[in-house]
Length: 127
Image 1 (cartoon, rainbow, N blue to C red):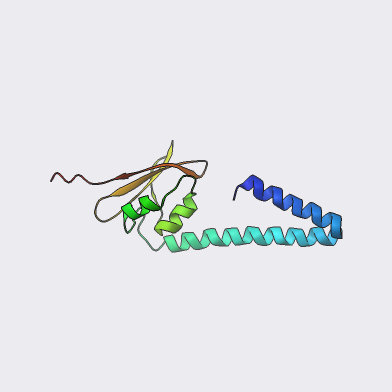
Image 2: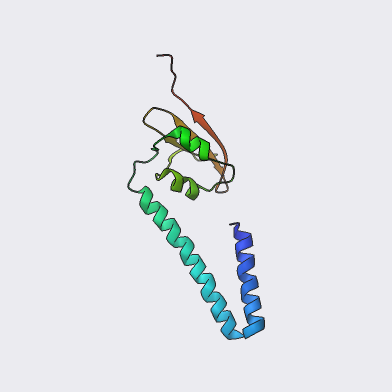
């Protein structure tokens, strides 16, 4: 979810709760917002815990990962797909890669936390 949209909805919830129920409504609305934030934090922790059991930058099939990608996915969504943290290739632009046992690899570029480009690189078959 877009953070601006999320915080706007949270502010509208608090305002509507204040208008309808006064300070008790505000207290309830803030409780709902904090619960939502805890759910998001718990999701992030669970994804990172699952990724910690796999080697960095490894994926079962780079070709399958390449076929599942789409513009705008977050790094957290990619880590959920791969079940592995990506190997950081560069900082500017922010690039990560995942490779499989066959030598194929997916190189992804992120801007503002979202994937903007990716490419599949296969090993040379001229051996």
